[in-house]
Amino acid sequence: MPERRTILIHVSGPDRPGITSGLLSILAGQEARVLDMEQFVVMGRLTLDVVVSIDKERAAFRDLLFFGWEQDIEIEFEATSPPTPEVVPLGRHAVTVIAAHLPPSALAAIAEAIAAAQGNIERIRRLSGEPVISYELIVAGADDQDLRRRLGAAATSHGVDVAVQREALERRAKRLVVIDVDSTLIRDEVIDLLAEEAGKVEEVADLTRRAMAGELDFTTALQRRVALLEGLDAEAIERVVGRLRLTPGARRFVRTLRRLGFSTAIVSGGFRRITDTLRDRLGFDHAFANELEIVDGRLTGRLCGDIVDRRRKAELLIHVAEVENVPLEQTVAIGDGANDLDMLAVAGLGIAFNAKRSVTEAADTAVSVPYLDAILFLLGIGADEIDEDRPSGTGP
Image 1 (cartoon, rainbow, N blue to C red):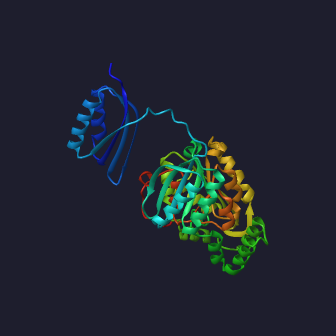
Image 2 (cartoon, rainbow, N blue to C red):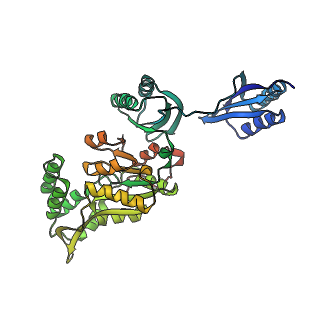
Image 3 (cartoon, helix red, strand yellow):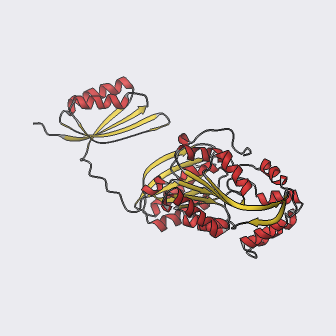
């Protein structure tokens, strides 16, 4: 019996239907055994590698070369060793690079940082080309902390976003997304819009500034700002609803999550009338926010029930996860302010979206491009999987 040899067959050229099936049919006719196979297409160009065990290589080579000539593709052969069972190396990471402009120098810096952390790039996949460019790199062998530190420095130097996640089943099995509203899902701060309606813009802005400076805690600042709205006609809330501006990409973001089977929730330190509107119009499964007290058609300047503060946001994320029967490691939280920190910490993946520096530093990863649907790339979802809709940034 002729000795079986292990051969790597490398195919490259213009992609078209029938190439893979034709090649495998020839191998089947020569009684070859397929030991491994990988294929990808970049800009219409096919690369296909097949490792086979075969004892009739001359006849197979002849038929394959003729097939390549017919299909206008190149086919090369190389003797190799049989593949061994794959052992997943320790320290495998998914590195996602996102930017509005991504020059070769930035990509080179990312690759150099990975190499300096003793990482090896196993696979590169382009996730999107516009309005932001994003790539996913699968990296093996790097030390987690060293990789994050070096990539963080490279990202800062070149003005790009780089997210580092452990490449494991949990990353690809996220099932619940919980998002903040003000300056995250929408571009506005609702309390500021209500302050305009009440003629209290400067007073509210001063309390906001003091809260940001740490002079007031969130609950105290919220209560004092709401008190300034006392006597405001409740119809002002409806006018504010009409002025809301969605963050670009918000509709695509939610539509895509829903189509892929994610559960979704709004958890806001804002106001329920706003979040209920966003829930109904965008299709969120859950919405939680503070309740403005209204008596005889006017705001009393008080809140009803428990205040949705930093601690409460985290509790609500846990509550929704329990209702949806989703383990916490399969949850994603998105926010921009200090009031979101506990929620980001509790989630399996906490994402700072165009956030303040303290939040960016505390979150698992950060996105600074102004498109909410760019977060989908962190979940390994490419542009070809994202739902299209009407232009982003329109009202709710």
